[in-house]
Length: 375
Image (tube, rainbow, N blue to C red; front, side, top):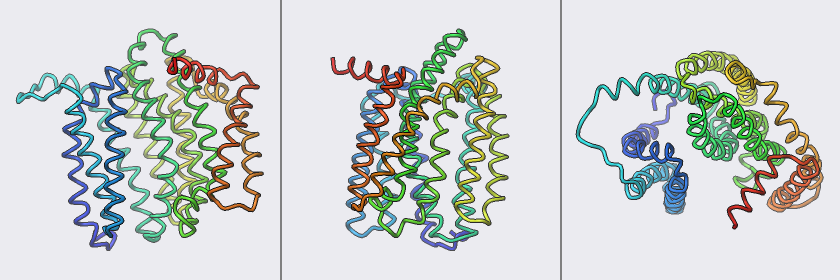
């Protein structure tokens, strides 16, 4: 609060810190559900918590709570998540502590913990430096752009990550099978993520206008740059999951520290030049991280960065006609909501049509999965 000269941050931090304590009571349940690949229960818990916390936040905002509505949403989402996990999963802690188990888990998990800690510090440096060197408004513009870019990507990555890690771990001793699984997972997720991120980039202005209004338009250039980061993010997640699934958590921690050091250096160098420059620095960090991550996928599985790029190139090519169609819709003199709806619908149809003409395998896999679900 003193750093930002914003006294309201002090009580807000007190309340937000409760999330750390509350969340700890549900982490084992989530881990066991993930390990058992019970994603139906995870979806029920996530959907219930999101719906209830969103309703609470809207009600608080309508009652004039302002920014405290976001605090209420965060705490209620965590609380509802924990309650639902305890209701839907039988695991309960015992009043014992096993140091042998801790030592055994820490050989692998300690490096994962260290990596996660430094990554959390790194990601929060963006808001810290922007708020100190520029203005609170610029923090909001950058955060809003980042949130729009991360929301679909995080949802997609979390789903894929939860499925991929246990699946990869089960195939860790069979390198050929693991490489095939990695290729299939990569092409499937990028088949969805590539048009999604390209669409958000092209439709950034009507999207921001529709969701937040004209006062948030300065976030549009940042959003367009950050979609490049979002486009690459699932590829990072999959390559890291392959590395961890083979037991290389120590190597992954070292790689993460190297990438974070470069990222922090670029962030500090770009900070004086504004939020768009900071976003460009994030793109440079992401590109570097991709080649660092895929180097070891090539070493261990003979499936490196260039091979991965070749596999997703058809999805990129199928997105090109979509861009022209979306651009054509945007030239029409229509309200932003109509432009957004029409461009999304027509762009999706053109992308799927181009994918069908190119006979892309991920499209066949998607259709087959939907057909199995409906029957």
